[in-house]
Structure formats: C-alpha cells, structure tokens
Image 1 (spheres, helix red, strand yellow):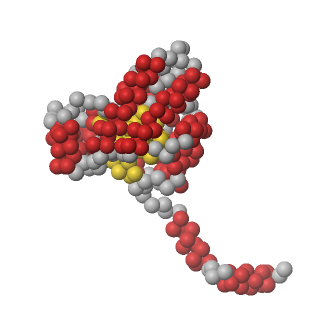
Image 2 (cartoon, rainbow, N blue to C red):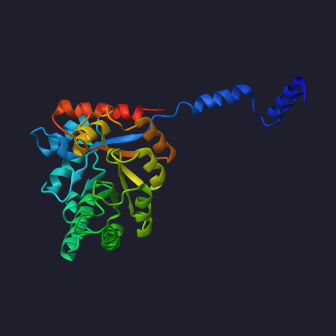
Length: 304
C-alpha cells in the first residue's frame, strides 16, 4: 500500500470509531497520572508514649492528623472512657488487635489453649462492636517445633469456624494478619486459607512491611485482592536485615527502606482498595507521632 493511501485509510478508520490522535494522547496522559490513594490514617494506641489520659491521647492524635486509632483487646480501659474520647474528638476506632492470639494460639496442641484463644477473640469481637469498629486482627496460628505446619492449618481453621455465630451476631469481621509465625508463607496460601473458611466475615489484614523480608508486597496485594480489608504499614530494610539481623530490618524510617511504595500504591489502586492504613512502628512523643503522620501522607502520594 502506498504511503498516501495508508494515511488516508488510517484517518478514515479513526474517524469511523470516533477517535482522534489528539483524544488518544489526552487519554494516555490522563492514565499516566494516577489519583492519590485514598487512605484513612490510623495507628496503634500503644504507640502514644505521652503521659496522658485516654481522652488527651485521642485529642493529640486528632490534632496530628490521624483519622483513627486501634486498641489492643482485651484491655483494662473503662469502656465509657474510651467511648467518651471517641465521641468528643471524632477520632474513629476502626478495629482492634487481639494480640493475645500470639500466645493463646488457635493452632496450639492443647485444646485448652486453643479454647482460651477463641474466647479472647469473642471478647474482642464484642469490644470492637461497642467501639464502633469493623475488624478484629487475629494471628491465625503459629508453627514451631511442637506444632507442625499441617496441624497448625487444620487446628486453626477448625477453631475459627467456631466463631461463625459470634461474627454474625456482632457484625465484626475477623481479619488475619501475615506475621512472622512460620505459617501461611505465601499469598496463594493466605488466599486459600480464607477461601476454605468460606464465610464473608473472614478476611485479611495485610501487613505491608512484614512481607519485605522474603517477598514483595505488591505481589501479595495482587493475589489477596478483595480479601484485604485493612492495612498495617511499616518499613523494612533488607540491608539492615543481612548486616544486623532480621528484626533490625524494621529499625528504619518510612521511605528509607526497601518497600516500593509506588508499586504498593499501584497494586492497591488496581484492586480498588480504599480505607484504613494503620502505622505499626516505633512510637513516641508528639514530635515523633507528627513525623509518622507526615510520612504516611507522603506514602499515600507515592506514585509510579
């Protein structure tokens, strides 16, 4: 085909489909500037190290730009005091952390220990409902010298299924977190684990930084997809891991480690995530907490 005929035919084809060179370039430019990720900022209550009342800690966090705060449950704070602080400041309590499931393991060989773990989760579900939250963070199980991988898988699934009636009654979801528990070590496993429970009130609380030691968070996000209902955010340095030890990898500021935040944000946008992101890092006084708040803003704006 002669060149002039090619140009003529191409122009006719574009006109027939309602396209133009100008609109195509405009559309490409529009797609090249993705929107800022819409995240609501939270953190863990224990990160506030100022010697203040519950009310004043809530006021401090609100002043520093946080939208919410997560409490550990069960706890000893008077319910009325917490609810008064929430209502007075407008600081939300998006969910709670049942960290006790690290010790009262749902995968433990002793049925009494597993039973204690189930009861702790039940209490956390009810506390979370009163707080107005939507999730209880739960450690799904632990693999160690006494508990095999297979046993951890089977036992923990059996135990969480005992909570069906409680999650339905409270309307609060159980969200499993990926932690360094030698268990559920790939996103495919994590997705399968939740899918096999086969209940809409069980989901995933994805910890971005916990994955960097042995993988890439954006890959996990792609696989876990809509199963992710909350995010924990922290940084990790592979260099410090190799030079100083695995746990030292967390001893680094946001945006100075090996978490590729632009790629993470792109993956989150791709699955349509919008919602809570909770910092789980070294806390401190007002100055330190302000730095965390500002760094979280920078992370949310990071784009490829």
